[in-house]
Amino acid sequence: MSLIIAKNLVNLEQLKSVDSRVGLIVNGKPMASTPKGTDTHTPIPHSELVEQTHAALERAGLEVEEEEHALARGGLRYFGGFALKGNDIKAEDRRLVLGLRNAHDKSFAASICIGNQMMVCENLCFSSDVKLARRHTKNILTDLPRVLSSAVSRVVSHWADMGKRIEAYKEIEVAKDRAADLIVDLVDAKAFPARDIYKAVQDFRSPRHEEFKGNSLWTLYNGITEHLKGGDLTKLPQRTMTVQSVFDTLAGHSPAIVDAEVIALPA
Image: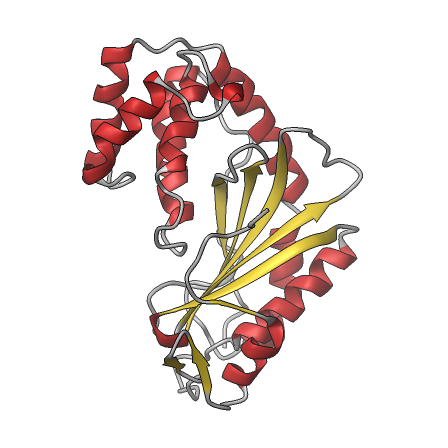
């Protein structure tokens, strides 16, 4: 079962070669090495972020049962997925996934995304995106263990909250003509590609998986996330969270967790 669907999958050793400025070719394309820091920007090496995340998960008593890593924009952007196990994380139809984002081109802050992967269809959706710093300040590397531990501490709460969201979505019936209107609303919110509107409506009318049959908000949600697979992984957390913000209102679900940035100490 694939954890993240991406073109430029790499292993940890390849990530390290990027960070050590050793030339790396992925799918015939050279990957850029970690840039040198400046007075205002300290890049976090992708492999160091991964290793520190492993340590934070271990401190929290969470076990990584599977992980995958991908590079984009010539190695400047990174996304990793970690399927987790823990005493309070149990379900037959989904598994907890921690996503890790990092960028060397200043496009976004390093962050931990907490979400789920549905076991039937491998759809990946996130319900939080905890930024590890507003920007890569020069103290971020020193503070990384602290900020990662703070972000990881939210994992179990988000897992429980997503379970409540799923049950709420299953209780809401959606008329077939209403489904199309909702998908258009998501396009307007930049959470869904306009080119896939018809396909998503058809998936709602005739679900691909037996488990997702029925005209519920949950069925529609799975059809939508099906069409977000294989897109830009760095944008997936924001897109799925935007979908949830629209659907939560319809389902009467109020998220128990409010995210805040985990900021590095002032330089």
